[in-house]
Length: 453
Image 1 (tube, one colour):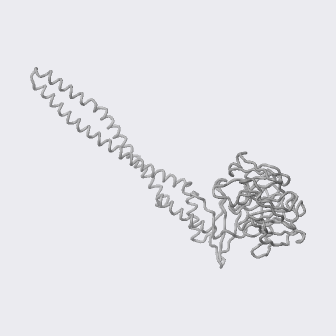
Image 2 (tube, rainbow, N blue to C red):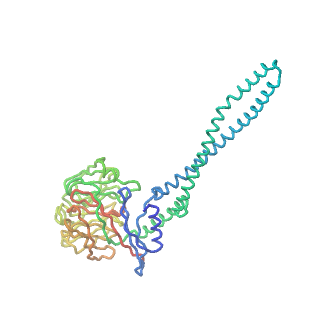
Image 3 (cartoon, rainbow, N blue to C red):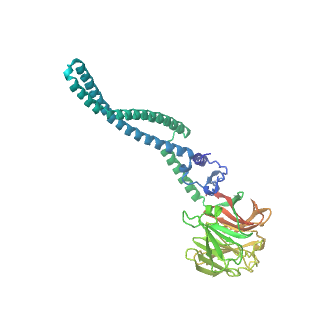
């Protein structure tokens, strides 16, 4: 299906309240599309939204062809006008030549009828007239060539007109400007719909897409969910302890295909794989401590440090895979979070929302889920999702909502392709899960279910 057709189909389905089928991106450059369901208060399906692709007309093959053909017709029209001016100019020369040829005929007649004494004089006059006519011969040849070119242009214009007519029939009689306007309007409607449906409940996780195979068995990688438009840098941290070097790749494409990176040296080594880059800073747990560090990547300076009081560290309350994963930092639509456990909560998970600037705890929630029994965890729209393990058959089976301070057991399969998850984080900008799976950097698409009230 062509992109323009796909977008128009989305529009019709939005109007009819019909659910869309899932479509995966053709390649990583197309970005991650998020599938979001909605229902009204009576339980009727309203729409399933695919995050709209930008500049859809610029990628549509038929609209490109239509635009090129229209430009070609305009160029041909201008060329024909130039040729017409030239032929009009040459026609004046031809008319002059006709007059002079008639004069030449008269001169020949005079020679035939005149006396022999006048022959020499008449011959000189004829020769002079021939000298005047000789420069007109190449002009006449050029005129003939231009005339043939005009005919060719007319034939080409007729062919292009037929192609345009056929293409317009395929596009439902729309011209390019009308089509572009309608698609742009549809994109605005879809973006508005996505803004309304910014948050939702996790209902599905796609099959994984392996972006790269590199590094050790454990590590973390991420993009900045608060980065400005056009900033698609990738951050890469190999290992789970006693390492200080963070790689910065200019883009996802560079990360996938090259070793073109800049290295940043942190002032202290990190602990675990729970680091996160947010709004230009990297937040991480200092090795063998419960200290959180905010490190500004633009100035290479520590902006803030703060102890996470009572939080277990140094493999006291790690995830089930170990790796000094006591404190896990994460970001969702609501901001910065810390997941950890305390003795006061009997080793069960504590969830705290942090100020990105000061690292102060804004509010905390205590759960009944043991931290050591959790495989990995991530936040989406204020809800903490926990996996039942890190190897073999894996699923998301526990969800704690900070909005209602309640929990539930769920069953969402998570394909664990390489059998050892050591990092799983949600990116609210990409609306995808970033994972480090046994030395493979992996992405998962997510499906969110929305209730419109």
